[in-house]
Each structure stands twice: as structure tokens, then as C-alpha cells.
Length: 225
Image 1 (cartoon, helix red, strand yellow):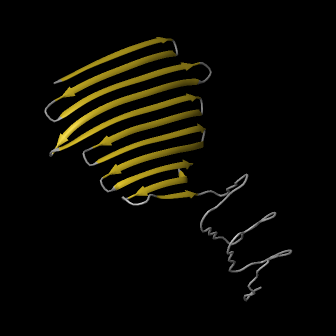
Image 2 (cartoon, rainbow, N blue to C red):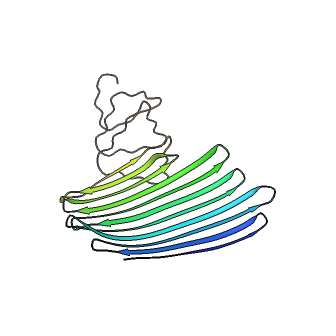
Image 3 (cartoon, rainbow, N blue to C red):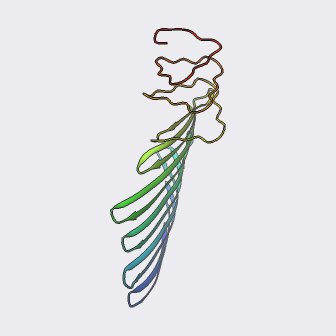
């Protein structure tokens, strides 16, 4: 069995126009149940330059059974666009969750962009959570310009969860007090410590070029010092 409804509203006066279109659909049979709702909006106006804006929203809920496996899926897609002349902005968000008898996965992805002529700025974020019989995993990724900048991942396979964080940037600044518990490894050609630096515990330097005074209550005089 299937049913649907579509409605369109539209007006135009010269170079100015607006429209709203909605569509709803439902379907049910022996192995699938589906419900969808789609809304699309358009607006445009032209004077010395043209301007237009659009918005799209799509909701979907589905339950299917294939090979004895029952799957429930729901999703929400939102797209927003606005443009005037050579300037344009876009926002896209997709949220979805999928569940079976053995796993559950939820994810949200958001992308935003701003364009002027040939110049484009882009940022995005993705969050994913998954739970299965084998364990759980969670991740968050933040991207700028199409490249991953910040990644946070937490995984547990039944034992203690392990969290990993990664920051990729040309310049990273930490303002205020910063405390690190555990091993701290720095790889780089030049390491600059500006100001008073206190180190509690073992501090190993493979090769050092020191301009100024180095003071230590306990110093091991190895080769190169």
C-alpha cells in the first residue's frame, strides 16, 4: 500500500518570484515501512544584480526486513543556500541513525561554506557514535578548507576505553595554564621555550643549542654538553 501528497505554491511579479513545494509519501508492505516528508523553498529577486535563496529539508523514516534482519533507519537532510552576485553561502547538515539487532550507529555531518568569486572558505564537522556487541566507538572530526584539523576518537572493545586526540595546524597557541599528565613527546627541528619553564621529572634532550644560562640541580654531562 502506498499514498502520497504533493503541494506547490508559487508567485511571480516581474523579476521577483517565490515558491514552496512539499511532498509527503508513505508506503507499507510485508518487508518495508517508509515515511518521507520533503519541503523545498525558493526565492529570487533581480534588480541591478540577481539574488536568490533556497532551503531544502528532507525527513525519512524506514524499517525494513531482509534475510531475517530488521533494520530501522531515520535521517534528516537540511540544505541552505543564498547568493547575491558573486557572493554565495551554503550550509548542509545530514543527521542519520541506523539500528539493527546487533549494532546502533548515529552520525551527524555539517558543512558550511562562503564563496566570493574564486575565493572559497570551507569548514565542516562530523560526529559518529557506534555501539555493537564488540564494543563502542565515538569520533569527532573538525575540518577547515577540506583538511582535517581536529580529530577526537574514543574506542572500547569491552575493556577500558582509549581516547586519541589529534590537532593538525601550522600554529597552535595555548593561553593560560597547561597541565600534561603522562609522557610528553615533541618532534621538531626547533623547540623554543620562551620565559620561565619548570619541568618536574626526567627531561631528556638529544641535542641542544642553548643561548644563555642553563641551571639544573641535577645534571648529567653527556657528549655534546
